[in-house]
Length: 344
Image (cartoon, rainbow, N blue to C red; front, top):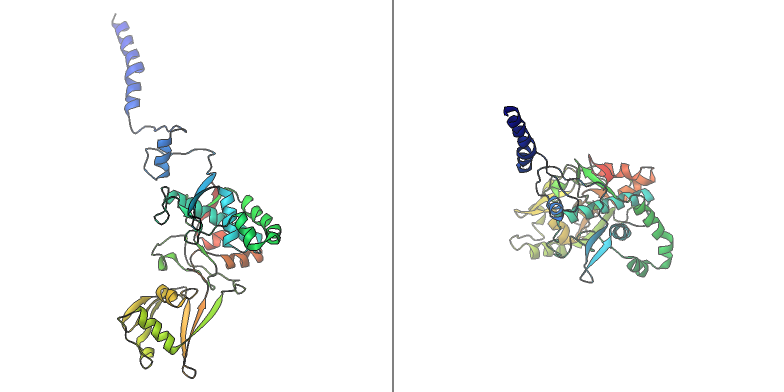
């Protein structure tokens, strides 16, 4: 009888007690059903889960974009959207490897913003992305045909499709996470560290050399102002400063340039002003500028190098690298330090 009782006790423990303990334990294994939308939402929103959540083979097939001109939300197939971005953001005459690099950067940016602003961007609350340069420019095939004409579509649309299709599903990662790959038109020979522009010290957005940009139409620009115009613009914008034709040379001082050569801060009559404020005030292409005064003709000359914020990939630099034989992967890994390219 004691053996039978012992046997029944063991059966009870094995069949009832142990499974109950396993089911109630929060720290063993968290199973996530592929159809559990609530669990998917937790992962997508970056909420902590007990164990990593991995779904094999799932892809993002469409993306929400706010059309800034028509004031409506578009639900577009992902690669259709990327083709429209590449066509809007980079000259189609560029080398195919540069277009591929642009396609991967644009796709990565789109996914990054979609993850970050799932419920809509604060500036366009119905979608995480918009069709203006606030996010990244986008033009539909109809827009492109209207802007460029049928000949352009015949010559270049197939090339853009090839650049996007051959890099389909490819994203840029740093440390296993999707990056936010900023890019710009022309760096002027050296890209900028993100910390000096956006106060965001991204490890992959560091300053690097960007050769082969001399063919860019905005590699260098010169703007001229009469001394009266120059002083008037400054006095009108900054009411607290007092400069005139007799003291302006003594009252305008360069405080600091970033390591890439861009103006970080200047002081005017003791007031510290950011380089990007001067850029906006005088309509300059970048913050990589110098100011000179020709006393004989009473003229202020501002010479600017590059076009855009200078952070991340230079599009004209990418084209220059491609023309020397560099692949899209080499271009991306040059402008985004320490990254890897992988499938979505």
